[in-house]
Image: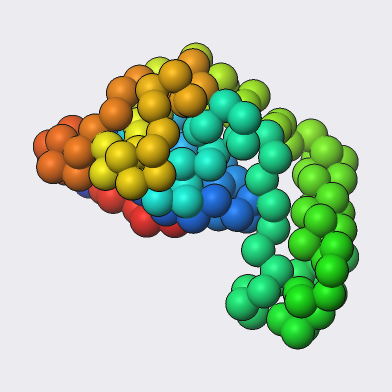
Length: 166
């Protein structure tokens, strides 16, 4: 058993990709930290912003081209070449969402609600917001603020604090 000095006190997760598998990895880690009583900050940048933009957050897709680790439900590996077939991304995303429903995994918006209700904080990257021309009004209600990278690092500091890049 770790003593108090060795315990994780704060977790800071950076999500830079908007594919469903990347966003859910972020949300599962964040929710798990909140449930363990760990101070949790999640920073969405670049294409990860799709997870916190109101009209995109519940419409994420699976990355099929260039994803060598992609597995279909049941564990079958999908060759990357199949990803170029029209409709394959939509089909794979549909299958993933169907399997997640079977496991009672909530949609992105509900996951965000769980994390923030538990005390977790969700942040957007100012640079990515400016680059993609998003406005604060485009973001979901669960976003606590828009931060520069420097402000995120300042927030992420402290003893027992860790940064995870998903």
